[in-house]
Amino acid sequence: MGMEARNNRDGFGSKLGVIAAAAGSAIGLGNIYRFPCELGENGGAAFLLVYLAVVVLLGIPVMLSELVIGRHSQLNAVGAFRKLAPKSAWPVVGYMGVLCGFLIFSFYSTVAGWTLEYIVKAVDNSFSGKDLAAIEKDFEDFHNQGWRNVMWQAAFIFLTGFVVFRGVKNGIEKFTKILMPLLLVILVVLGIRSVTLPDAGKGLAFLFSPDFSKITGKVLISALGQGFFSLSMGMGVLITYGSYIKKTDNLATTALSVTLSDTLVALLAGIVIFPAAFSFGVNPKAGMGLVFNTIPMIFNQMAGGYFFCIVFFVLLAIAALTSTISLLEVVVAYLSEELHIKRQWATVLACLGTMLIGVFASLSLKAGSPFRMGGTSFFDLLDFVSSNILLPLGGMLIIVFVGWRMGKPKFFEEVTNEGRLKMPLKKAIFFVVKYLAPLAIAVIFITGLIR
Ligand code: TRP
Image 1 (tube, rainbow, N blue to C red):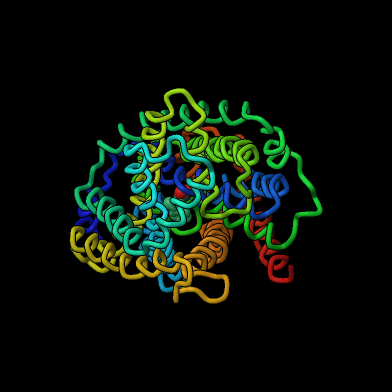
Image 2 (cartoon, rainbow, N blue to C red):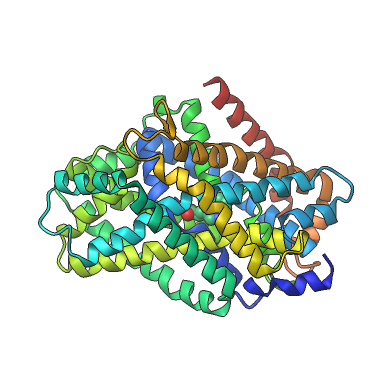
């Protein structure tokens, strides 16, 4: 773990703009695909309210804590705990993170693969003139071709591996800086089209006027899981990235800008999807099909729809890619720094492992697949265990570590860059990290178990 291993780490070197990298990790399918699905299945506006509360209360403190651990230790998720808490059980939190990164990549790559299929469909002009029933049927047919899903998944994993293997570094920073704002622009354009469709008001009401009776234990847990998932928190992505941050960078403003931009994109995705879904008659509880069927329908109703649709799916694929890079990076940083496997081999190994589990995630979505139990597919199981259990648990342990083990002086030292930066709210934030946030996570967990 000495200098030698640190030098191996060039794949994602410090040249990378940290905000760009962290925002690239945060903004992805979690915002544009998973957020609308979860919101649709969990009562609409009530979910949004809890989600926003989770982001405000937990987003900054947990994200900041992860960055603090990473920059303070200058190591990967496992090594960081080993260095800061020698001869203790704390590295288990890091191992949990590595495992979780692996599991998330396994099912995330399934949906990421769909974005590639949809780029091809868009180029083929295969949506134009079709009504909702036809578009829904295409989506279903695609899922019933299990191996076609697997092929795209493999392609996406390969793409991610290629980037991490080569260490695209400065390339990615420029990439993200231009392409993510472009994604934002397209979402705004889509949003305007969506809210001006007939009956859009119903979708807006679903999204924004909460029915408090819908807040159940399941809604709480789902919103908690979605918050962690969307912000890439709780598994060491931000420990790993934090370790690449310069000692002169401001951690708090980094956490703030990542949280804000991520939440903005999720909100916009909601404004795009729900008015249109209600207008076209897509069931908000449709789950998988909600986004992939609604979006082409909107483009069908838009001038220049053919062109914009291609651009949209390309940008979505890239947003997914900057997220999968971060998932893979956690695993690769661990394998190469702790187990001293050459970075390139570590990448190959991690990708093959992901593929091995991922195949079952993809195949489990097919109608009548053997990889589902009752109504729950292997895909759903992976998603549920990692997002709703492992991430919040990991996040809780991370803040408990910072609050109770690292302690206030080291926390203040990191967030103020050894006193060089002013940070007016640091005491309040530390209070949240030490008491409030762990308590909130525990309460949500327990309510969720009781229902
Ligand atoms: N946050 C990403 C998204 O919203 C997904 C992701 C990337 C992630 N890295 C993560 C989720 C680490 C949890 C933990 O698409």
